Length: 378
Image (cartoon, rainbow, N blue to C red):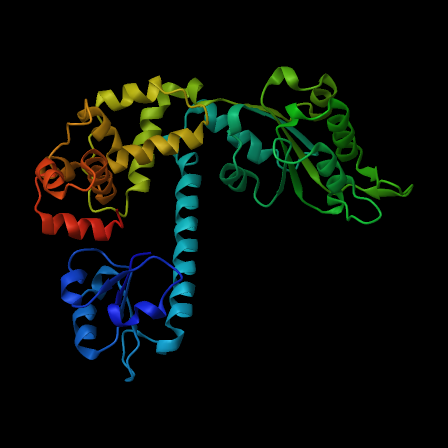
C-alpha cells in the first residue's frame, strides 16, 4: 500500500513502508497514493481533490472533518497497520479471483483442460478420486474452484507417518477421517503404496480403526489421491476409484491454446493499469511455446507478470550491459512496474553515478530522484 505521511509524524509510524513529505504538493501529484495522512486543514484541502482517484485520507488534526478518517495522533500507527492489513488481504483475494477465473472462462479453456477439470468438479462426491497431474497442476486455487472446501496433505512437505497419524488419529489425536470433508493427498508417488492402499480402503469401505483402539469408526471423508505419473498409481487404487480417475494435461500438452490463455491472463492482471497497449507479437507467442514450464501455472504467471512489467522488452532490447533504452521510448509500452525495472537496470550499470544514469535514461536528476523515492530504490 502506498502511504504518504507528513515528516512531523515520522516517529509515529514504523510498522510499514511509507513516504514522507514536507510540502504535500511536491509529492501528491507525483504518484497514485492509496492513503494520504494530513495534519492540518490546508493539506486536507489539497488531498481531498484526489479522492476521486480512490485515495483514502486520514486526518490527525484536532478538528472533526468529513470525507476523512479522523484518528488520534497517538493511534495513527495502529490504524495504518490495520488499514494496510485489509488492503493486502483484499489484494490477495483479487489475485486469487483472477487466477481462478483463468481456467474457467470459456475463452481461455482448451478442450482437454476443460474436460479434465469439469470431470473433477462433477466427481467431488465420489468416495475416491485418482488424479494424475504433473508438476503441481493441481494447485490450491484450482482445487478451491473445482471442489470447494477441502483439507490438503502433501507428501512432499509432510512426513508420511505424520499424515497417516492425522488421517487415522490415535488416543490423543482426533482423526481427520471423522470429518465430513474432502481430503486431498498430494504427491502420493512419494508415499509407501501400502499406506496409500490402506488409506483408500478406509474411504472406500466407509470405516477405519483408530491407532491403538479396536473400535471401528465411520469414515465420513471423501478422498482425492494425486499422483505425478500414471505409472506410479498402484493397480488396486485404479480398481477402487474405477471411473473416478482423471488425467489433467500439462501446459506442454496445450501449447496451441496458450496464446489465448495468455491474452486473457495479461488483460486480467493488468485491468487496474492505465496502460493496455500491450504488443502481443508473434515473438511473444513463440516464447510461450519454447518455455519449459517446469512449474506449470506458477511459471506461466511469472511469464505473464514479466511481460506486463516490461522485463521481456528490456531483456530483448538490451544486448549488453551498456545498452539502456531511453525512458521516453520505452515507458509508453509498459506499466509503472516496468519503469521501476528499467531504472534498476540503469542503477546496476552505473551504480551511484547519477549523471550517467540520467544520460542513459534521457531524464533529469530531479525526475530520477523522485522516481528513486517513489520506488524505494537505492
